[in-house]
Image 1 (tube, each protein chain N blue to C red):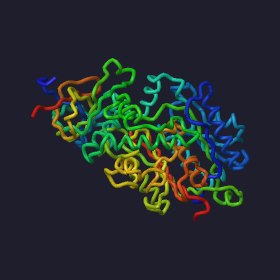
Image 2 (cartoon, rainbow over the protein chains, first blue to last red):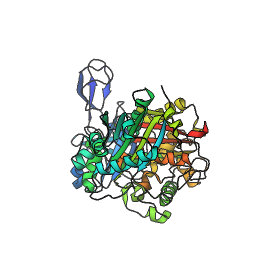
Image 3 (cartoon, rainbow over the protein chains, first blue to last red):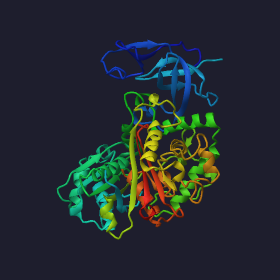
Image 4 (cartoon, helix red, strand yellow):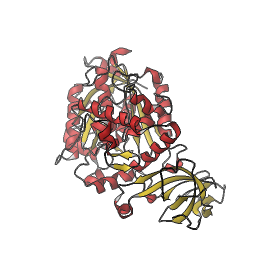
Amino acid sequence: MSGAAATTVPALRCAACDVLDPGPRELCPACLRPALAPVELPGEGRLVAWTMIRRAPTRFRAEAPYAVCVVDLEAGVRVTGRLAGATDAQGPGTAVRAVARGEGYSVFEGIPA
Amino acid sequence: MRDVSVLGIGSTAFGRHAGTPIEALAATAAAQALEDAGVERRELGALYLGNFVSGPLNGQEVLAGMVADRLGLPNIPCTKVEGACASGGIAFRHAMLAIASGQCDAALVVGAETMTHASNAEVTAALNCAMDNRSDGASGLTFPGLFGMAWRLHAARYGTTRRQVSAVVRKNKANGLRNPLAQMGAELTDEVIEQSQMICDPLQLYDCCPVSDGAAALVLVARDRAKGSGRPAVDVLASAQTRGAARIAGHADLCSFEATVSAARRAYEMAGIAPGDVDLVELHDCFSIAEVVDSEDLGLIPRGQGAAWAAEGRTAVGGDIPINPSGGLLAKGHPVGATGVSQIYEAVLQLRGQHPNQVKDAEIALTHNLGGTGVVCTVSVLRRGDAA
């Protein structure tokens, strides 16, 4: 997995009040205006936590086991995604970056020290 | 607002009720509660029913009216409420409010769910209706996954060990052995727990509550009505309901649920008590680590020490703060919509001094019911009727 090219993470920014949101969402949660526009954020962030899903919902069964994670992006948004090449050594605060995109989620991996 | 008491309780066993329709389970529990209360059907002014997944799993909705029909209730408002795993707690609170506000003098609360007839995939898909499926659901996250992450974070931050969390499992399973309504009581060793199948690292099989069928019911009355009844009443001191983030990424901390913290704060304030006044707790241990997080969120145990307290026996019956003497969701079972009502059933038995796993001299009990990924929570406080 390591060596994959870094990529961005899709999110939403309110054109009216500048608030960032991971989306999907229709109205800005801060000002309630329908002014959220897609934005691509830098994919670097820190791992909050991850786990390995071994019993997956039906639509993801063929992909199991897979690791799901929560990441705090440096851009200031918290997102739920997948973690490639997860290891027990990757605790909270581990530096990660987005390397791919699935349907409705980003795939992250650890940044080698 | 008027004072409210719980006068009658009823419950089916939790477990497998193959072939019994959900409305029949609900009516059985409700009839028990009415008889226990000595309240006539014509006295009831409202029915609130908690249910979560009867639509997807049974193809059956309008349960409140159906159960009222089975019970031959008068022409009263019958309302189903839904808040995922907290549906039962919400139903209780709304019945309490109907009486407190003077809308009626007596109300019936029912919680019911049937799940064991469905395949694992169907159950997982139905339970996943409780998450924001456009965001969290898209990643392939599951509820065990959410609590697997909470565990990893708790372990990294506070040094919580597998063996300490196993103490929660052993305690609740052992408590369940003494509860005739419990689905999965057991005397387990650390080795058996720790060699069980991995579900969502580090959550293993015995860390997860079972899939269950069951129903529970309560009859609530204005306290004045309870006084003349000659029956053992339990007073409702508080019932708080809050909301939390609908998305996992919306939680400020994955080791804490804001909905629980705020509901507990409001309930303690309403009841005029402090966490230290609580004699026993029935809380939402859908997973072993959930009991740890909940007990800290409720202010019962210092932050980070929930698992250590369990390992030291401080949350056992006879300990500093007995948690889930019923066996909790882990051992009693988790027929989702019934759980919040069942927790109050168990608490009332304790406050009457009639519980098979009795906490000595119990006077004040707290119940905690959490729904979805922390999107809704109810916390209620009950007091023995003669203890004021």
